[in-house]
Length: 246
Ligand code: IP8
Image 1 (cartoon, helix red, strand yellow):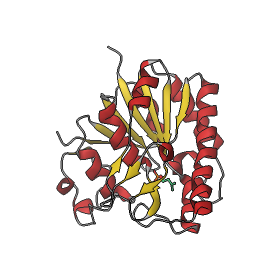
Image 2 (cartoon, protein in one colour):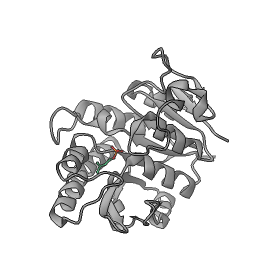
Image 3 (cartoon, rainbow, N blue to C red):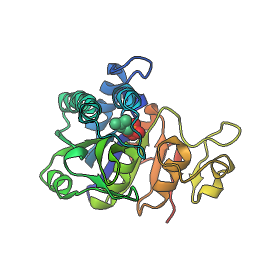
């Protein structure tokens, strides 16, 4: 049976973070070519890199701290729309039937910061043979105006919605690293990695601990791996770190 995969392309993988709004075209084309080589049904998510984070910083917006400045919120959203366009174009050029899905138009957070994201359109697009592409964005947040929604959060929402068989996070690091800098093969609980257990595992604004903790709640196994291992992941291998809390 055809597999359903949710793949996140980290913002740092597909952009040059040292220069505002700069796409790493070589890295993006390589990822798109790898994604074009799979028969799996694909949901693609990407992060902000030098697009979203630059503007979010400028306007003081995080996943928890919001803004009611409409121009600032639009600056973040439009930057992410520009990056999404680059990603969708690269995917389509490689032969992936990609179409963008905008979290700002659908998602929101309640006063506790819990995200709700309608996903019917993602399921339908997938069912009709498209590859929906979601991106980090800003979303309405009760009591805060708008706050950032990260790609990792979207992965956690999208994977159960499409009944994903596997989840892949393509990141700049080759996996979860232990205290010696070696890749940890498997994580079944945050405590499995002392270097993570020591840090604030409830921090979902970024960092490996928050990423691992949210992936542990999924009912599908997740892999965290570097850009060179994307094809291996798509081919059914388990590169980098397997995060599986089941
Ligand atoms: O790079 C953040 O997404 P992330 C997106 O996955 C914005 O954390 C708008 C900064």
